[in-house]
Length: 144
Image (cartoon, rainbow, N blue to C red; front, side, top):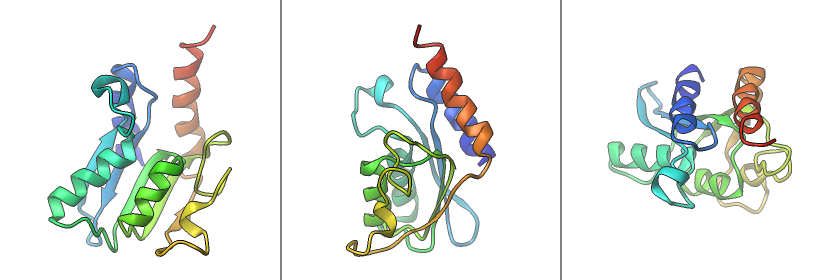
């Protein structure tokens, strides 16, 4: 999670919501990492989780990321939660919950929905206060 927090700082430096994500392989190696690049790249799918999943798929040579964990500073949105399911990620470890758009247990629960083809374990609240503070601080500077 500490690495994901460092990546979130890159997003903030580029003027994007500070979210960072790391994909860890079954053996503990980092396969991919990402941060929000929506503003920098003008890409609505440029969420940290999607960027990290793409990097991990490229590194592993397969879109199937079975046995991998995705560590992310903020609860994934519906798009990202769907991507986790489709990539066959084993577990998502998240920092702060997102009461507005969270899709891993807060507003929706896509990864554990009984109708999905692959269920993802959800572990939440890891360094929750620290991860939440990064986002609160970002938005405090953008509202006023």
